[in-house]
Length: 126
Image 1 (cartoon, rainbow, N blue to C red):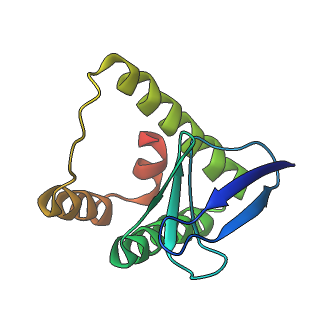
Image 2: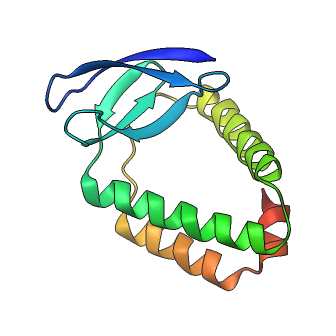
């Protein structure tokens, strides 16, 4: 079990979070006091827009529902997502550290691609 100390940038609340297992490079969760969506990313805590947080939750729910219908386990999903994050981190290390915005068009294209892709193709792409 790991412990993470959080200071909410929105309300200033300070609290500890206990994680079953090791800390990830990125985690998303609400503040214990004000429920503001927060993101932990490589040791930094930042506030997420509530609509953005709701969108992330909705997209993750869709993916998990498809995976579970295919008879996969949560461990299968976690392993696939970890491989995807590891590959992304490797690529990011080679790039210049410049902030990039994700456009609404890019999100719409991703959602369209996911909607058109069957579950087996999605899992194979991970």
